[in-house]
Amino acid sequence: MHITNQNKTPLKSSMAMNELYTIVKDFFKQLQCDVAGEKILEIKKVPADFEKIYGKISPYKFSFEKQKEFTDEESDYVTHSHHLMNSISEYLRNKANVALIRLDIGNDLKKELASKLILHNHLVRIDKKITFDHIFKLTFETSMQYTNEHEKLLHTLYVHDNQVIDNFSIEDYPTMVGKKSDIDVTALREGKEVAKEKIKTLLNDRIKIISEKLKISLAKEIERISQHYDSLHNEVQREIDTHMRRIDELSKNTDDDPAIVGAKINRLHETISRLKEKIGQSEIAKEKEFHIREEKQKHSLNIGSRLLNKTIIYYPVFDLALFLENGKKVRQVSLQFNPLTHQIKNLLCEICSRDLSEAFICSSNHLVCAQCGSNCESCKSIRCEKCRTMHCSRCNREVCESCTQICSRCRKHFCKSHVRSDFLNKSIICFDCSLVCSLCKMSTEKLLFKKINGKDICPKCVGGMVMVRE
Image (cartoon, rainbow, N blue to C red; front, side, top):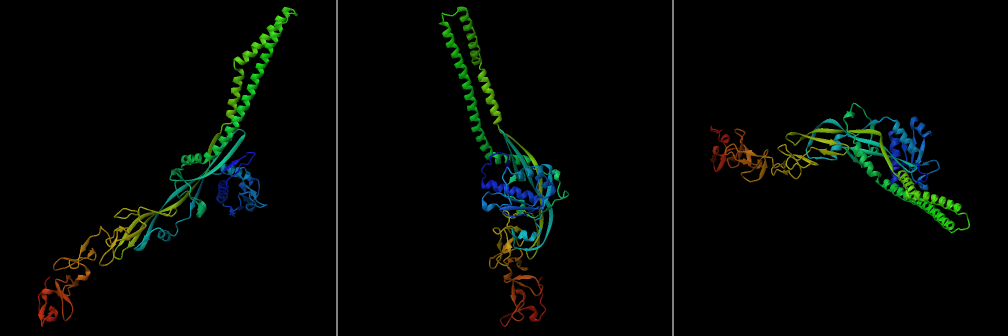
């Protein structure tokens, strides 16, 4: 926005009015005033030190559009030249240079995390460590002086990581008074230089308008000066011509005393010499050039900017340790969560290294994405290419490591569907190495069975003392 003391109020675009509205609203919000209204701002509980500068006791009502539907009889129509804007500028100059504001965000971590990250495993607990990130709110006053006019422009910029951000508004967040103990203010870089470069960009349109105005005005003044000195030059030349004609007349005069006539002619020649010397030595041209330089100086645009106020807006960033359970084991996963941007950092798939928005803990405790995980054909749990897998020697199904069973006799790998428990020693035994007793229905090594009446009978049911192979 800008404040100007021009006699003629320039036309303002709706964009400029919106900017003016935002600056005023934000200023009184920062003063902890009661601010209400949209088309017309109603301001209450204004600090006395601002009321003194403004020269009027609150409450205030401000409108920013001249149309009838956007104003009323009690409101002040605020333009860039309004006394309010000069008062805001003066107030900011007199205030402390640095203010601290903390954003009150990130209180419900589980809820906020769930909105950005889908976890397919049970979240046992969250451990957190808090650090702080910050945004600088910088308010600059830019003075623009030219001819007899003086404009003041106020710009408020937000700088994060040495970059100007345009999509941040402190009005969108709950805030609290900041504490110096939270952050080391002296170690923070404020990004003043990048903000100044941004202001140059913001001033471009206004500078073009003023420059065009000055160019037209200067051209008129140079034309006026040129016409004046051209007229003066012509006037001197006419005077010379008049004296020359008088000399010619006197030269033809034979009636008067020749001595007197000669004296007159000499005086006229002296006058002509002085006039020619004035033109010949370019005194008129030098004087003309002097006044043109003077006008160029008057029509130059002088710009100066200074920092009026700096606010450090800081907010928590969480370094989190998530403890996730896959049904068998608990795996710790580390990440960083920014509750302002809702960004998750340092959470990568251990297979493809992509950032994760959906995470799985596989059967072997690897952290994987949906593309890198697949279901075990036996237990249906998630497995990945890092997991150790086997093929069942009987059905050839691929199974995860936790589902793989090794026969205690043949030492081959099988899925759970194709092994049994040996009732004699509780070991795992495959279908090929075992039989099921026709009487008790229990399994053991087939070599220990006896065939009785065409049925396979285990050692226990036979009742004899049978050596059990270990």
